[in-house]
Length: 330
Image (cartoon, rainbow, N blue to C red; front, side):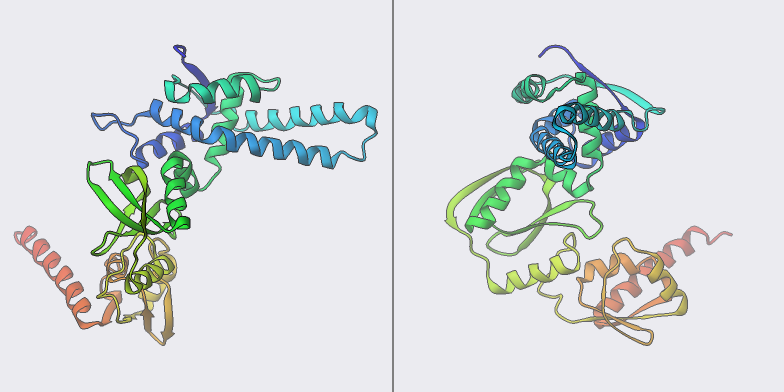
């Protein structure tokens, strides 16, 4: 396993792989992206799923050509597969990027499996090219589940069995008795979030922030009130924690310009539970609402709760003072 494996893939695929490496926090000790570790993890965690999809494709092709006479069927089958494989491999061939990764001890079994069982009349480079391209066509949340397959699988197992887990964070923190509610994707399908109760309060953390997950024998303990908060959180936006203070519906008055902005700005947008004229009512967390509407300026006014409206007023007031001081000489 001393030799590097070179792959020529579409430039867009290489850029996506590098971006995932950064976004999923696969870094070296100096903080720079660790592409070799990332690609090794991807290959190890995804090769079996990719092989399964390939086998399913072969089964579908065989079924589709059942009407072909027996003496021609195998030839048609092989030629069809060859065409499909070539089409996948040559997609976006004009703008290609050559890159390489060096297999590690952790991926040795996966590489042997690929080279001895999965390669079928194609080069190693072509196979990896198609594997990376198939990975790139998945949603970002699904790609994150692949990279963190072991932890994701253990979390789902803990939820199914109803047991607590011990969580170790990448930054060193350890939570010894977490009761996991769910692993939920953000509405924008960017990242996955682990929602758990630590015995005192609800906690929301990125899946990528966890280094290890260990199942415990102790039964999960999630109070009804905390479970209800998690259920609301998942319904509204998994990435925004819902607190016990987030009980009162939030009413926002929008101007005509505000309505246009609301229909236009999709990212992090909360879903209204009712609209009466210019007043929109939300059941989301205060954090989500503030983060979204802080971009609206005087086109949106928080009517209630009062303390939330005052918070937004102060946000703009201190920004105004800062700008006034900075530009006082002009």
